[in-house]
Image (cartoon, rainbow, N blue to C red; front, side, top):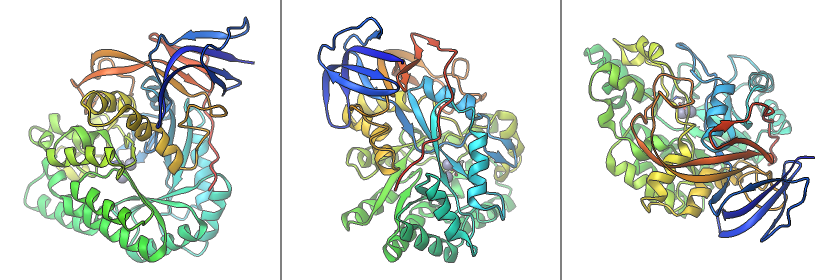
Length: 455
Ligand code: URP
Ligand code: ZN
Ligand code: ZN
């Protein structure tokens, strides 16, 4: 049986910071105490009083996503390896069925695609229309361990739901006691603006952002909150990008509505000025919702520290430059998405903790514990406690620059190129096994597991 003793850990959880030793046996934390006695059959790791955090949970990634531009650049293996190196030990990806494919079949297919995933993983499952059997399909997915469903109010020509269908899906999800995650953008308004700009010869990446102005997000958020009030459905807004959306979400929470929210590092750190310039420099910043203004960045940090927004996911969905080039003469044809799974924790630590925007406990909450609680993984994941999975990271200070030359994501673009990071994992432990330590990635790690969640 694999036994790992971590000595001298400075444990940081969502609630506390304290010094202790941690013993992990058979993948679980079995003992936390000062001065646990060393035994001959233990592997020993000295954390040397460095921070030890629970392994990160990224609640929003798209590995191996099929699109008109081909698959997104990271598959489950490469993307999960990059995630682990950055301290994320659990990923939540998506199941998007093909037209007329029952949700449980799509789930089974996606699980097979994720077999080579190195982190543990689960999925949000997307109903893309309303049909006769959808309630049974949703309940079947719940029986198979899915507790969150995902809808899109944009992309109406493919996976987006029209309002009448959306309301019916919300009723079903509410009745089943599950959670609905929502990509909230007003698809019809965006489509009109996109086509108008294109007709006027405005074809650069800049018009991607201009065709998705803040109101196309916050008005969608407002609408969904009204629907949540009508149906009693618990909702979680993915990738919130605007100050106004965060304000609307805060008002809903004040009314005790079950509303949760996520943002992403790109909406905390980058501004829409990144989209001004030549195609080759700007195409990588095409993702949805688009980048916003500095005031939005600042207000989203406040929403995080004030617990209005509970999580930071990455929406990891990288495309290579050759794929982005498809939209060289038409921003509508640039595949939407960018990578970020590898640097989420380093960016939050450097620009959140070290700049006093969030506390260390907040850092743990938003990078791990809150996702675990919201998505039905707690206390197995996102916690350092006896009985929890021994997914742990030992943190170190660093002074590095993010670059495509050194990153592990399988993509020739990085939206954080040249950005400095001042902390990163020194050692990553998953299920009590050392995955990565002192620059060396263990070569005999087992694949991650599908996490069956409970309501
Ligand atoms: O631009 C993005 N975000 N692409 C991935 C799909 C989505 O909308 O989340
Ligand atoms: Zn989205
Ligand atoms: Zn996404």
